[in-house]
Amino acid sequence: MAGSLEAFDRLVEPALGSSHLAVLSVASIDRLCADALRSEAPAGRILYYAGDRPAPGLVVSGLVRVFVTSGEGRQITVAYVRAGGLFGVVEQITGEAAPVSVQSLTDARLLRFRANVFDEALRVEPELALAVARYASAALYGVVAELRGTAFSTVRQRIARHLLDLAAEHQQGALLVAPVTQQQVADAVGSVREVVARALGGLRTDGLVVSSCDGLVITDPERLRAEGWPGA
Image 1: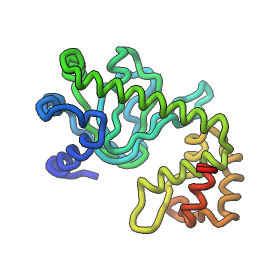
Image 2: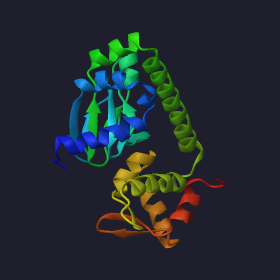
Image 3: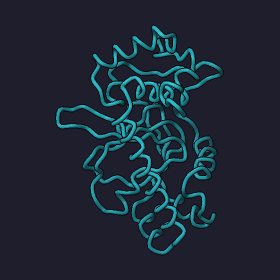
Image 4: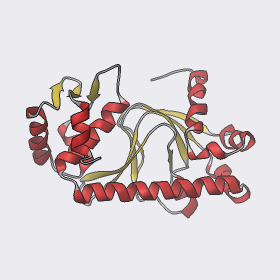
């Protein structure tokens, strides 16, 4: 996914514009971005692990997942972060190690702010402090919503939501393809491979997805959406 710095920077402005940092003045954004590290992460790379102390950053492009891992090694996704989403901000505020791990699900471009620059801006710029407070509130509500879905949704419903999330990120034209394996789906929805295999078999039988060499092709997006969010 190598590209020029100019091509990277062309994506930064719209990502900032869709982020919680959009309320900042141009001067404030310039100060934050002046020494920020621009990086590219291939799909599957761990950006940081639970226990690390990451610098705050912005997803410029791509899809990133935030997940926790059990003592037995099972993983469950607690949030997805797309272009315009922030990461590492709560750790910056609290000064504590990350309670979660973060991984790029697709090729991603990232803007990582210098921790000292971000911290100083938080102290002197009320607009940034308010933006961060709003981000933290949104993140909390997102985790609550995900917890509610995990606790009260069926495995089939959770799989439907996950597949639509991934396929939308990779959409090219009318075709929706979720580039995942059964094990990756199991990790994402907090289940085991055998249960997920049965649920996916049901979705195939019902004509909602078909397997391909690229992953799972969603053949009826509207019906799959109805599966993931019944009554919505």
